[in-house]
Length: 109
Image (cartoon, rainbow, N blue to C red; front, side):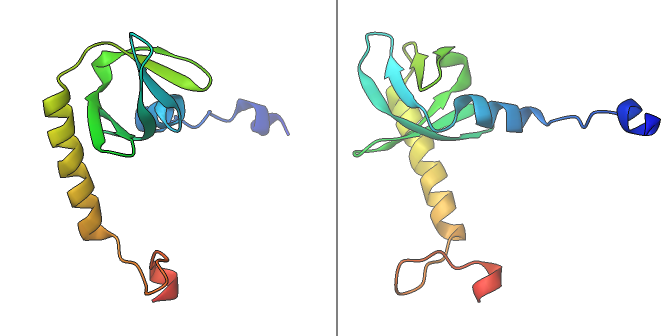
């Protein structure tokens, strides 16, 4: 029983921490305008989806994180949109869907 309490704590990778801190939140600009919803962190960018587009916003633009939202300062939207499209296209190449629109995984091939 003593060994249980002395066990080393598992180191959580930084990417997992970023994912839990930044994912699934509403993203707003400094002026309060809603940009979209954060879906994942890839590299040094926050991937944000909206009805119109996908953005890959640099993490350094994140000013504040709340329980349900993120506030970002000004960033290069053209560059963020370009990186967002590149990310989306790279994901489309890897994902396969069946005729019902369900994701095909190794289990159900």
